[in-house]
Figure 1: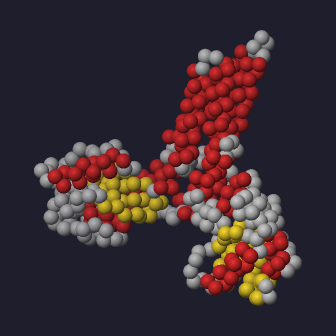
Figure 2 (figure 1 turned 90 degrees about the vertical axis):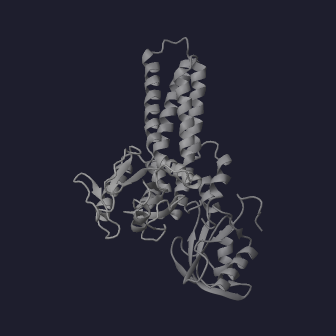
Figure 3 (figure 1 turned 120 degrees about the horizontal axis):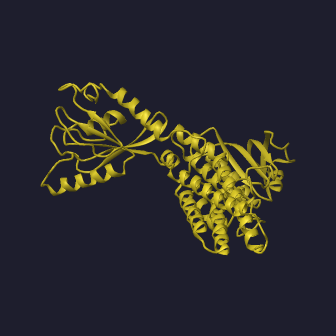
Length: 431
């Protein structure tokens, strides 16, 4: 019987497919007892990584007629011996097979434990593991592509390259510390300073690139303008939902209303806000205050103007729209819309796509995707800045070591254990 308390020696199992009625349910297991358990259920081990049809038996009872896949370690997802059982998806079959696995020494997996094992065995680093979670949660094509790219190691390779360069810089710094009386050429210190400066510039540029976080979390588009200008109608027209109440009475929207929307494979959040005007109504005034706060935080603002209305720009990142063009046509340089007749919506969507493409412009460098990445890089950057300004070689060397530690924590190659539980607790069972 394997130890439940020791994850290193535990054999774990979990349903890798969703609960509910279906044709097939996949049960996966991983750990040192996998070979023994599989032989007990289905006889001699099948050929590795080949699907084999077998009867599953336990205590003289036939449990199911299932496909088996055997993955001997270390060439498996977790690095340990593993297997999959492709069962018929009846709840009774799943329960019976689960009970048999427990009886044979396995235990149910905790959230994220399969991927946690993969990280501990060196099959994945933390960045790739987080990408697996993002891939499972992806809702749009852009999220899927970004998660696949990161799972393939795009971000890991970039950070590992920086870590390798930092190691080289640190080695040069150690030479300056260990051999102060030697006539080391001045080029050594100059090269060290130049490489630190180059790394700092690259990390700064990476931190300023918000594409990854925008793709993962979704871009916020705020619809703003004066009362009764057509903001709620535009929200409903774009989203295809009757999410906002539309009336002829000004000031109907008192608080922000938001809906999720996918445009050209990009996740967006449309936010309808209270009409902007001077008012003595306390509740409406609070709605206007909140509307302006949403405008300030938006990735893009759709600023609506009614017929004959003129207004200054609210923010630099806005698209100006002339509404109700059935009453008064838009000027030649303006983008006009009429939600009643649904005219102008396609040109608006095209403008939005162009703007989003500019924000999410694909470059050679992969984007960072999580707040944890940003915090780690900010810490690395801070130590590099301190190293540049350090007056003593020993202090400079210490700051460079701390910069390496900060960068290493991102991939999990340094000080990994403190991060694992908080990261993998967010996973679903069976991943």
